[in-house]
Image (cartoon, rainbow, N blue to C red; front, side, top):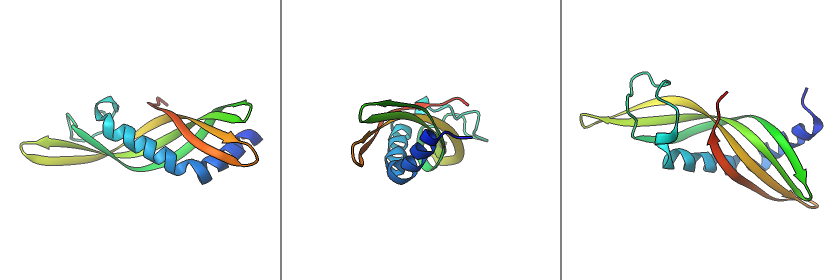
Length: 125
C-alpha cells in the first residue's frame, strides 16, 4: 500500500508535472539516441541513427525527500520511442520501449510554486 506522502506526490506529478516530464524525456531522447539501450528491443534495426519520443506512462514515484519548502523525488517512466535507421537510402523505423528515472523538485509554500526536472537517466528495472 502506498504511503500518504507518495499518493500526494503521484497526484502532483499527474496534475503539474506531466508536461515537464514529457518534454525532458523528449529532449533527452532527441539529443542522446546513442545512449538509449534499445537495440535488443528492435526487431530489425541494427544501428539506429535517430530517435523520437512517441508517448510516456508514469509508472511510480520513489525516494521522496523534504527539505524546507522543497520536495524532491524520483519519477519512473516507461517511454514509447520510435527509432530510425537509414539502410541503402531507405529510412526504416521501429517502435521500442525504454524506462527512465527523472529526479524532480517541487517548491511548495501556500501552493505549488514550481515543478522542475533536475536530471534524466536511463532506468534499469
